[in-house]
Length: 293
Image (cartoon, rainbow, N blue to C red; front, side, top):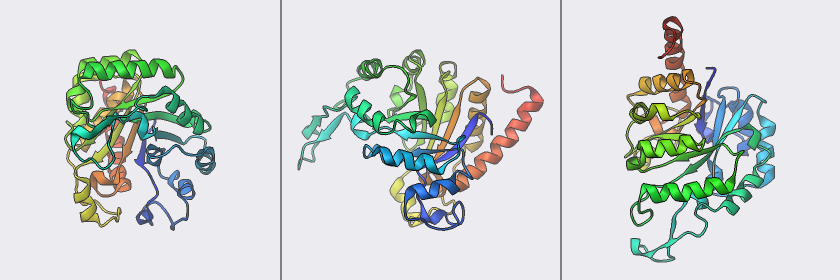
């Protein structure tokens, strides 16, 4: 659907044969050609765990058409506030991560993927749940983030994801809005439904949005699927409201990326098919009524 792009969180799953792929492949990049025949965008989850070499970005680009786009998770070291001291399991052993919101490390990451940046719609800074030991308050978090954003400068499509539901306030969304940052709405365990969060702060979302449908208890759904991501095992309610939220964002002039994880319902491609039908049905209704006010 124009203005709303649908894709998955990662894509290298042999169990998507034949849902998405005709056969298994040796390398992740080799799946992308067929993947792009089904979806508009993809999230590069693996770059959360490493800074990739430039060739990896080139390989991905070579497999997809010019209309295809990416969202990229930023290297975890940049969004990790603390590390656990070696061999020390207790919370008291947490050590401050010197690379937290490091502009220098971000620039290294961005340089490594510079060829894919023109086709990247969101660089996702995914922050873990931050207790008081890791972050004293929302105010301190936003101050640190503000310094980082100023140091990075313009030209990067930064998208911010918090796992602290208490942070989801007007103060948080106003900060993102004033700095041209994209909010990431996470549909996941311990977080409120994203359509409710959006409804409360709708007026402050004006620079696009990424909707990440991540799901509940990962271990539980992995046990139920056995690692075979080719069927819905845990249907979720509320997808109609997510579709309505997406269409409202679109009509208000926002770009919308919906990224679905296998852990959401058991099979990201099958969830997307449901969402696509819902979006098409609602778009037809909106065309008859003049759109969502």
